[in-house]
Length: 205
Image (cartoon, rainbow, N blue to C red; front, side, top):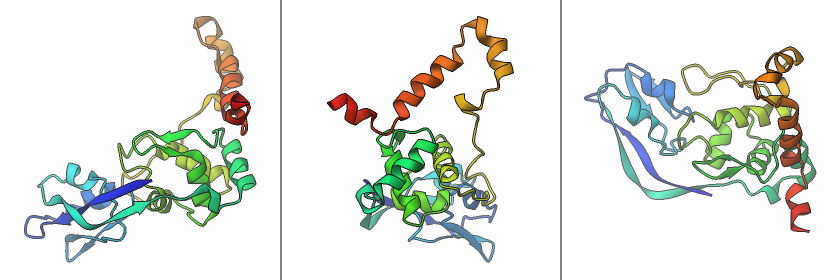
């Protein structure tokens, strides 16, 4: 669970309308009106990305009067479907996929099952991507694709495409680097053991 205690606040008298903040907002909470940036308070989850990137310092982070709790309880979604999505994405359901917020794969899968069909909606539901705002777009996109959803980039610089995983490496590349200390097939075996749905339960027993 992530507690959102901050909110982005614009200084219209300083804003130049450059749209940088709009392009970097992970939840698409910022739009332009009369060449000035405007924040949708319901969509802002206090990540500070806009404040950090504004070239003229037209944004400040203020304390929310009423903090917002972001969390999707995996128990509210079908367990078999959660395991299926995580399995296809090669994640263990209990695996942490966003270290900044400690969001686990099963929570994102549950959010998808409950209707979050874009990275932005998943972020608003779980709080993922509110730390570094960069690395965890990869697992989010992998889980969406595993669920059969391929969202289009919203424009701007909010997220990037999926980078290749161990499973995407061609046999040609494996062969080329086999004698240089790389063990791709062994790595895949280990990663699949980690991703196995019941791995943690088996270890407990």
